[in-house]
Length: 174
Image (tube, rainbow, N blue to C red; front, side, top):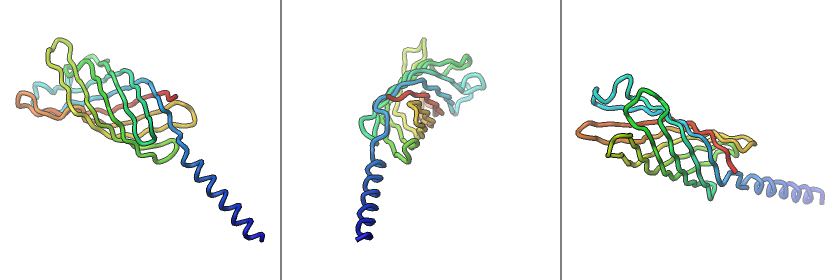
């Protein structure tokens, strides 16, 4: 009789701990500041020089996560570095696929469209963008995203160009 009660008690403990582990502990909405460190790689020396190839941008990041494995995100970043000729603004609309590893840590992949604009030019570049990243949070509503993204990979007037970025997003989830 004692062994059956012990077995029943252990069974309840396992079932209750499994249900607690499966609860959705993520923030449905988030907003914050994003920083992008962008690098242009090109075959043309005229485009890429020491003063022109790197861009630092800052702006707003906002998103909605309806389920544990997916989120939709928007970003609007503005150039803050002085010495560059690459772009002035960058706007992105992204879908995020999420692989939850732990309650406070996950990996993700992003894909979507990114608009890159330079003041004084009629042409704006909208291109498919993709990347990978990781999200770190703790028991507070503050979130840190670290990611690598390919913003532009194409040729323009016969010159191959790649625009890559490392992004740090400081977010508040609610």
